[in-house]
Amino acid sequence: MKRTACVILMLIVLVGGLTGCHGVNEKSPFVVPETFDESKTYEISFWAKNDTNKTQTAIYEKAISDFEKLYPNVKVNLKLYNDYGKIYNDVITNINTDSTPNVCITYPDHIATYMASDNCVVKLDQLFVNEKFGLGGKLVRFDAPRLDEIVPQFLSECMIDASYYALPFMRSTEACYINKTLVEKLGYTLPETLTWDFVWEVSEKAALKDENGIYLANGQKAMIPFIYKSTDNMMIQILKQLDAPYSNPNGEILIFNDTTRDVLLEIAEHVKTDAFSTFTRSSYPANHLNAGRCVFAIDSTAGATWMGSHAPLSDIPEEDFVEFETVVYPIPQFDSENPQMISQGPSVCIFNKEDPNEVLASWLFTQYLLTNEVQLAYSATEGYVPVTLKAQSSQEYSDYLSRAGEDNDYYYDVKINAAKILIDNLDNTFVTPVFNGSASLRNTAGQLIETVVKNVKRKKIVDEESIPKMYEEMIAMYRLNMDKGGPLPATAVALLSAIGVVWVGIGLYTGINFLQTKRKAK
Image (tube, rainbow, N blue to C red; front, side, top):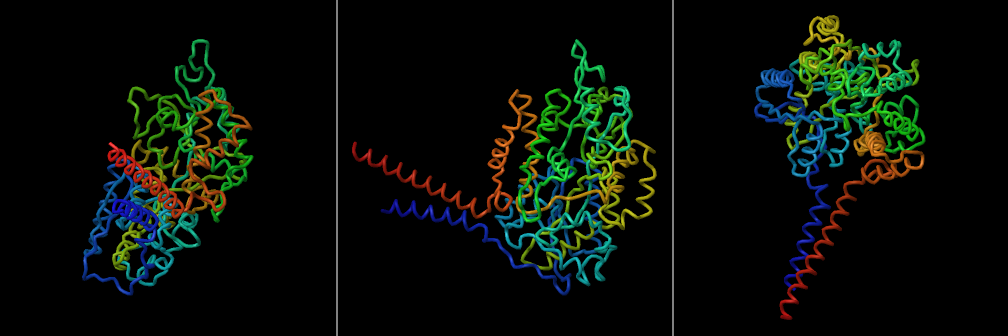
């Protein structure tokens, strides 16, 4: 009996821990303090991403130093990651232990998942308009942007459930980096607007080989005419351009439709001829572009410093570089008169804490990240665009853009021209709805293309009959809840886990009894 009681108690503790953790660390909603208590010292943690870019690290460190001079009672501790996925995983883990960072650079899709824990992420609406400490508030000790000085298209991505839970930090879109020299060698002239038909046609011609297996376009044994870095963005943008459904703000998942099927079948045909590949299968587009093994490489404008025969950053040996003329275009379009392209990038959210003044200190630092000093410095490190109209309209930024090509470093023309794509197309950009599960849906969009590429390469059949089966696999893989959108609710996952623990416990108890019965029988 004692042993039975112990097993039952263990199960109760385990099940209680699994099903109850969702509510353990819930906090009261944040309320803006009337004053900022400067008699106390506040230590806030700031998590950010950095791809071993020392210039970016220096910008973060200078921003922290300058902010701490303005607010001597606030100490900011920087923790750098090289991947947003790792930030996401660490935040999720720390929510359960009540040790989230104070300020975090992350993606809105991830923030929607963090919000599954009530009052975990601070709702910013009240802070935006607070007279004292809000955006451009009278007690803020630096030149912070006003709400109407933040680019509205960028800010819209930070709205979740009709409220703001983040501020945009940097924004980018995607660009097509083109080896113009190869395009012209193949007998083509680049059009004013890049179209999908043009890209596919040129890519197919670039995939032709001679009798010795040498590609006619570049005279090499290797060639990937068209390579796409982010297949989730590829699918999302194609659907938008074709006015086909993807999802809606209510969290309904609409991607599994006939247009998606047709897109996948089209991609499959170009994979069969080796005209198309992806980052997942073939590595970074820049590596192939810079070595003369690629005609069209689509990647983020934020990655422009890696692209081109004179790129200041690159992962290939210097002797592998091939001299060619690099041009930057917006992504291919179906309708040249109605271009559509995604805008996206890291945003800054604040996590709720017991002390409202600690949250207020975090908010003040978050605002500081939107000052011209930080925005202009950081955007110039890569092909990012500042998120404020204040920074974009500054004389310093205009001067920077006007000097494209003066060198292959700070004024690298490919980087500046990539940034201009977004600035010139603000009204043609869009964002996808953000909800709990939108990150899983985004992964699904990319995985559909990746699965098609993989299946074609493995000589599996990809046709109208196989696509619905692929849809079912994606729904199961990403645990998509097709009724409400997103993955299964956290409570459902906890309950399923708890049931599993119960069965394991019963199995252990039965096994123990069986072994002891055998011993007694001997």
